[in-house]
Length: 255
Image 1 (cartoon, helix red, strand yellow):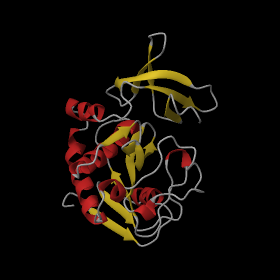
Image 2: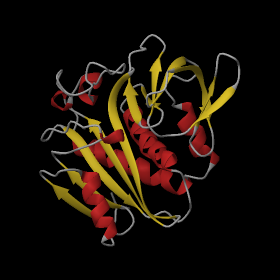
Image 3: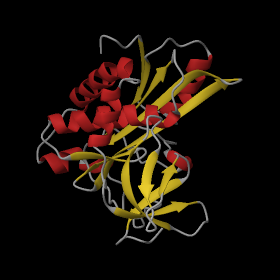
Image 4: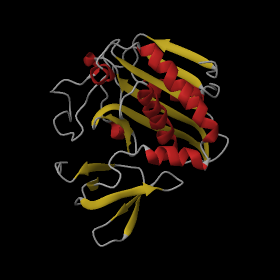
């Protein structure tokens, strides 16, 4: 963690992203880290609740002070790629489900939440929140909201690995990977690596956006800003931007 400028650790916290946003507003330096053993109000994209019981998962947020303009989606991709590569280092077949999840064997093990603080049209800071299910205790229970509706059921690293894993070792690896990719965020190699690790690439999916009827399309590739190109049944290419968009395989059409 030698590139991390400052660390604040908590046994219990509401949300690491919320705390990091407050710290950033108070002048926290670039690459400041907030990490907690437990979150009581952890959240994912769309304010969905994120399950973080004591000592079972990785839950941390990194404060970034960008010097160049990048989309929020690209920062989510940065976090996802760092986690994906770290899991692949363990021999696991990890893939990134655009825009903000990491899957192992098509089961969700990580969620990313990237949020920006703006001053006019200038980004003051990016809060990159990462949650990784490490032990079986970190997997949401059956009555957790959305548990049964998700076409990519939850799993954890230890279950997929078949052996115990030290959470702090995994954290170290993820941070090292993240810090290595951060200065290359605008380099074509970053986009290439992100795209090469996309889950569902080439597959037909249903795209859900708000209350609109689902759209059937084939996942093609990424654009430099991190948006996703899909091919409609008509052959037309459409670009998807991050937001309240959800991808479901065609055999999992339940929203």
